[in-house]
Image 1 (cartoon, rainbow, N blue to C red):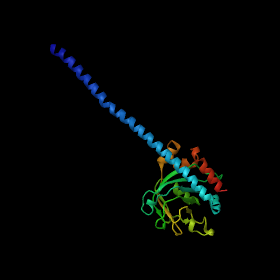
Image 2 (cartoon, helix red, strand yellow):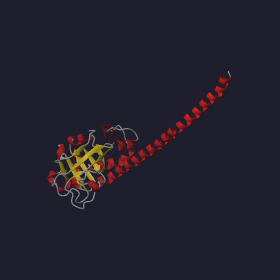
Image 3 (tube, rainbow, N blue to C red):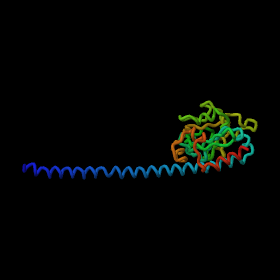
Image 4 (spheres, rainbow, N blue to C red):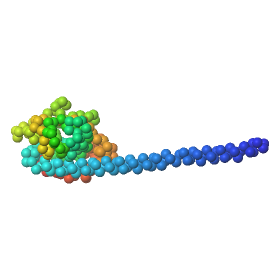
Length: 244
């Protein structure tokens, strides 16, 4: 009995120590989870700011398009537009990430959809030596071109993908709108003097789109009108003005 009596406090002590140790070991994961949550929130906020910046920069691109009277008739007939506000020089012909693009589709009533975001790869064009990166716009002239953007896999806007891409800067007045896609740039020498250009490695940017709408959004939901963000209203209105 004496041995048992002495053993009881020892068992209790071991149990208490085990509880303390388990609590101590359990504490760090809680702290780590909180840190991960904060980091995730910061990442989402950065992505939201980036998406808003791309939309605002796209407004400036559309205003440049609208300044060309020839562009108005093309935008009136367009099915959609893919805007790349800033294309990086480092990506020219090197296959590196070239920037981010913003897609808007035209609705049956002539209004423009909310945006969906994409990342892009390399530009296949006769870029002249020393050409800096700059703004690019791809006017989607038919459903064939639009459907490329509705897929989940990586794709290209190029002859290799079955599309005819016409260089706006090198095209004659009579050929405007003849291709599946009309490519425009505001940077001299970026497309060179080639008649056709191409953009490779295009893919849906789920993270930027989710951040812009603050929820999980599919491509069809973004451009189909299921979600809306007032931050794109100026861009949509500017496109509407250009298509009049």
